[in-house]
Length: 268
Image (cartoon, rainbow, N blue to C red):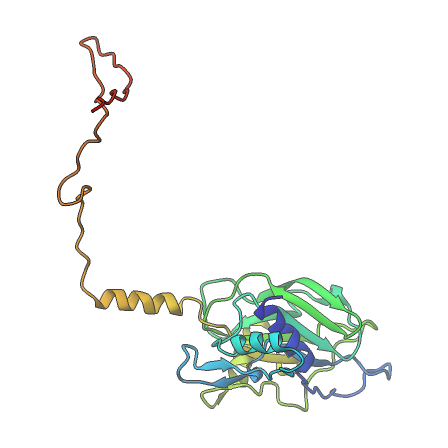
């Protein structure tokens, strides 16, 4: 398993997002709630040295028991964001109806305008019944060094056909960038979709990592240096020389040619 896969697994098991239900449904049975969302900027810290201004900060496992896992998490903690093709993990308090997951009920929403289609639906759904966790991938790759919101609405139903309990009495978005809460931005981006605050069951905001930062730095270094001198001399110390022991193609007056054959070398 690669670092990104282990990252999603660790976060799915370690995150705890408390969602308070907004009341009892008419049947009297409590509706399912969202307990954790991955990826999330809650698992990052501000870092002005990074291109995105953030850095992944996961807790290390017991390095005496799992030294390889520690090494992988240390590498992950050097990233300035999450994958542009992240493995989404959503943990619920109980079973949910997978057929209620549509592009209109659960999606990834860019928090800044971009030329590609949005919102972005979730695909490749995998349900883990033991932990009540749904794993998924975005339907397209995300842009690098951007902020996105992973949104679950009350259109998602539990296995009893009830909508997910909305997060009415808890902060909708607690992530912040540069000290500014993203909640206002999320609600503004949801408004054109016809989704209000009461329609949202859970949201998390995450930042994608910079993919081409290293290449851009190398290009900047090359552009600041002098232009290389182009030389077309094929032979050492002079122009190209014909290979010894081979004759050129001989053409007759009729336009026919003989194949090139090597000359027999004279013995000395």
